[in-house]
Image (cartoon, rainbow, N blue to C red; front, top):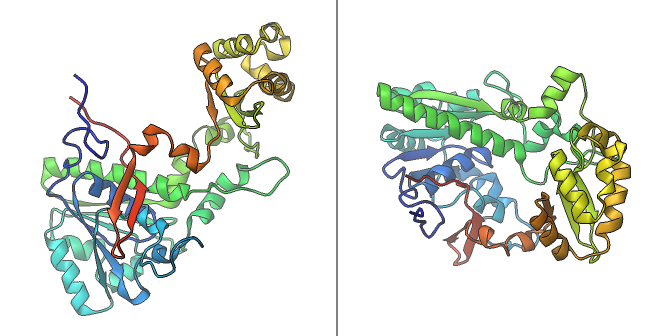
Length: 371
């Protein structure tokens, strides 16, 4: 039986999975709020505390030039703040601290990205809040670790953790990811920690403190680029979209209508399928391309052979041909093209704003739970 899906695209019952769970969000910008939105999407009551002295979460002001100047929120802010109860409070005041403490006394989870000294001064640190509620899970995100006071934004972490160095084209300046990748990786790490803590609480009845840092989350996601150095002594260099270990993987070709396609050929079998689809079966027997290691060494010559044929037909023709041949390839789409896809449309969440506009963003929950 096919799993029933709700109007938001989640599996039946998943929208309300965390119904009854109360979350107090003391975090701003992206990583912490992304964790809060995850629980909001799954039915939790998320109460977001913002600093009234500064006009709220700083991302409210991160507007594109095309956005209305008089709007109280930016599109950036909307991306991770769906379906939350927002309270603008001055935590420097005793009254606001008492209000938050009352919320925490009945809460299941607090999400914080306060620096340790600030958290203690405002009486929002883990020890203070967990003394109010023995079942509380206190989830903390730091920049470089609990003992490091250094502030950081995503691009700083992309630089410090090696991402910036190896991104971009050879001989050109580094290029950062156009999304706050490290914030999002840290959000995933913290979500996983909270889910483990909730399971532990089911067994013990007690809350706990969980934490991650942007830096550790970035390191944990270096994957093969880290092991290329740790095991092979290879410092990853910028090679654009190309893969350092596989060819033709990440190689870009242009079709007759000028539209780019990216290839992701990872096995000898897929390479043979590509060659036959292109009408170049002789490349399979060419010693320069006989195996993956050879293809990596001679990838520029290989790419020239592929491009010469791909340039003769339209993108849609090649998409269909590659699909029928089992060749992994993808269209390089802009945002308009992405959200013309039915699967992308199904991921959109809407919410009315105080000024009457309707905000739209992509849901952060991209999984289903079936029987």
